[in-house]
Image (cartoon, rainbow, N blue to C red; front, side, top):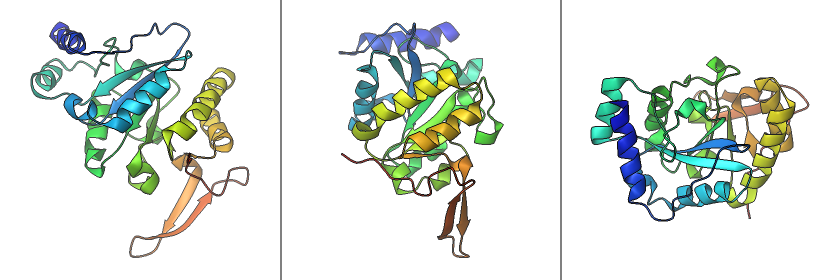
Length: 230
């Protein structure tokens, strides 16, 4: 049955033009996830832009992951196999970084389903050293990231053309130098002005649900996160 899933991925790849295939050796393995079906993700210009921005770097190998549908979803449910990437059919949790591209709030439930199918703990606080880092970017995240704050290790806010390269530079460097997950995330929050790590901030709310206060947990963290712009 898992062979059938792999065959479906390979048939889909055979119909594509311009597919990027990279050897993962010595490169940062990134799963770029669109929390919807393949046909929707492939028509999303923002998702396509981030895919090419990542893969133009010689130190990154980014592969795509989508929410399965139809026969493919049935096969996953029947077999219990973990969710696979499109390019090399690698299990989602085997990537070092899982990056969600979010355009619509309706995709939030799909995001949780994808994490579940990938055997990645849903809650940020439940993840440990072997688990991938889980992040999100896109229009909905820099308008209001808080609905997903319990599930994301961090958000990258703003325009990908402006903040993706500085983030990847910092992430690769810190992943090599820091052994503890919490240290990597904290140093990223200090070094990347557009990165919001919700575990390092405390939000307070009025009775009507509007934001009352937003403070870092210690003085060494930036008080303001600034979305990157061109």
